[in-house]
Image 1 (cartoon, rainbow, N blue to C red):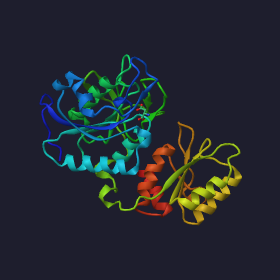
Image 2 (cartoon, rainbow, N blue to C red):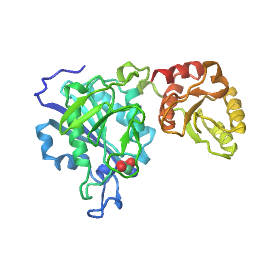
Image 3 (tube, helix red, strand yellow):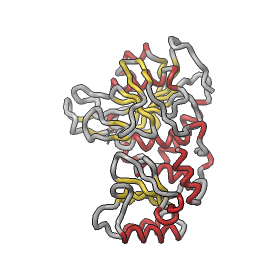
Image 4 (tube, helix red, strand yellow):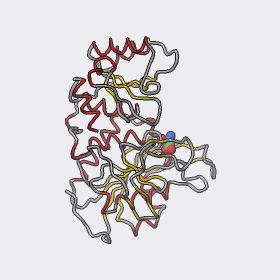
Length: 334
Ligand code: ASP
């Protein structure tokens, strides 16, 4: 359980390194030529002396990868490490340094699976440490400050990036190179970081962490779920391939989840064979809904979850059930 300390009492925060550009090094001064995941997290911390006044920081470099190489086994290792460490009474919160490319998937996964109410904050950077005006140190400083704030407990997994606080469920990377690379699309951020001060204004309404039905220790076999994007003239053989290899499929459909007559009919055949299909959209704003009576033909509707976050949720959902109605309930809940 969270031991509530006074706001002015220093918290014990573990910073977990996983790699990414924040741990990247490259050609001196430039932002475009570098290798990610080169520096261990203890070095990232020791390069920010100001952290000492914010929290008692310890570190654990769990792995060093570009976030495009994050696999289910990395996610499992991370979740188990945080769950186990959060049981220690002298640990007050966590920061995870992570590559930005798939940060939103890891954040949502942790939001669904962690069994702690202690703050967990992900951050990263768009520029390697060797760039002029690298953004990593300030993002890390703000992430530790956020994890050390009394206001951050019970809020689900958070992301601190470029002066803003985001909820794990709704945050997305929306820019390929600018330092202000994240936002929650139609929905507002949860709040702002002003130097080391956290200012919250919003909260996610969806269930998370202690209040979900998912637990990492229950998962023995990980269902295989892939995403297929629909585009004009997409060949239906892609669906045959996915159906022959997957336990579940997410469609990144056009507009409000749509696809061609050929795809629609193939998708309903796949659903009839017992392979759940989720309809998400390749469009970044808005949402997908249809009537519940149509889920046996069109598939489960993703609401406003992106295809990549739908894949995380469908994978976890399939560890519990193959029932379309139950999976739809899960999509409506988280
Ligand atoms: N490719 C890098 C990664 O996701 C990009 C970054 O961290 O900004 O690991």
